[in-house]
Length: 119
Length: 113
Image (cartoon, rainbow over all chains, first blue to last red; front, top):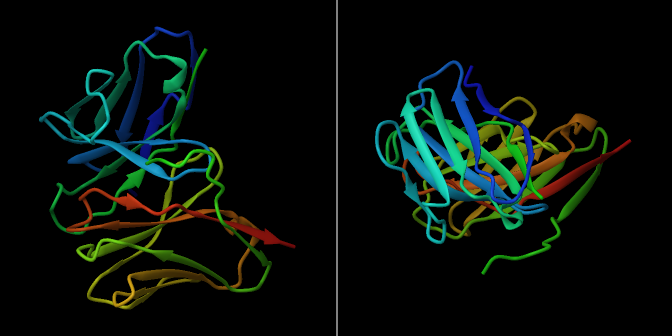
């Protein structure tokens, strides 16, 4: 159990395009979803945390107007990279958890990531 | 600031030997720790977790040790197999597992035949 599906797995698009990435929890209800960014040979950096039905909480330095997050249901969160530019090229990974921030012990389960390449 | 072009530390282990991957954490308020395995082009996969009220926890072929005094975490893999080759990250969280995870820098495990 605890399968998280992320789609698409790879996107290549022109500069200025907006790109939407979906994250779905397939067999559990995800109260909280997280979006990370990972550069080559580096660790995961948290971008934002979202709870179902409320606005996402962004980490310092992450532009909320650039990276739009929607968590409309307990099984789906989306990240939209608006007007993407080459510097936005990266590996974006989502995770989902049954628990709320500050709640009981519920591990985060990760999707397989989306490799975004902006030309 | 963010490091650019950081090379992951690498641990080379012969197949069948035991592996020990270490991690130092900085937040003394962290009370929950997780080890993740990440294969190339994939997301992190949960391996094992441990709470701060424990100092050891065992899974199938894996053991996590926690030393809160020196803020050190280790992952031991018994009888390492080629399929264990991956990057391993430790992650910590201050209160409850749904709280924000802070990931360590990662260690690349290479299993040689």
